Image: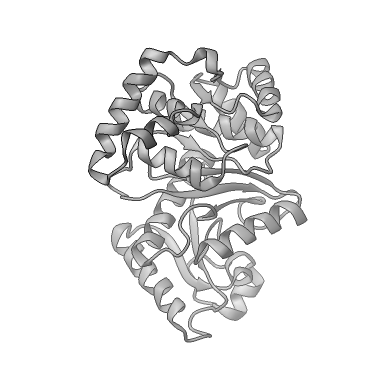
Length: 309
């Protein structure tokens, strides 16, 4: 069974309500019809007529009080809530819906800010990051072509602790959503010290931190991508690697590499890129690429429905 079918079937097993605030986007409208027809989730398409004005005012006041110490003025808050995105995020925060999916017509920074401000950050992780579930057709690498890529959407230049926590969150996603045994690779242009620059030191520190946080993690780094995912190359470049060229969770050193990497694989290898799923928040939430297809939206809703289960 392919990953997309598996995810959709898993979402159907216990229906959750997912809010989609981008009611004017034609792709979102088409996705809602598919989701309802296939019984993947209950969807709330948040058109303006479904916004309760009294509740909206309550959300505005609650949001203002939450962020008052950060000098976000009431005029600014009112302006934010002119868009249904913040109303949808506050509904999710309150538990009136089980998860949020948006980003088809919002930039990632706008979507991420709304999610972080309204849903709150998990105290264990202390920051938000993102991951893509990648399904590469006719691919022998990873787990039959299935991977998790992180971070490809939020943190521009993660420090060692952030990099370690991104890896931990991505591994949990791989395990809980895809049923994979996570094999984590911290990616670089260098393999085990073949280059000596400061960015390699960051990866080395992140690797050590992850081993402290999660001693049972199967992880290695720094690794060039071929040494991370191709066993024959790993035997040459890093014969003692514990993952042996079989990584299925790929951790990119920064956002530039992550964003370029996932889009290259998506477009050139015709892979399904599901996400970016936002990790490290108190409620399930996914961003969408503004270049997303209808099927991408359906898949993201399935993933967030599963996370809400």
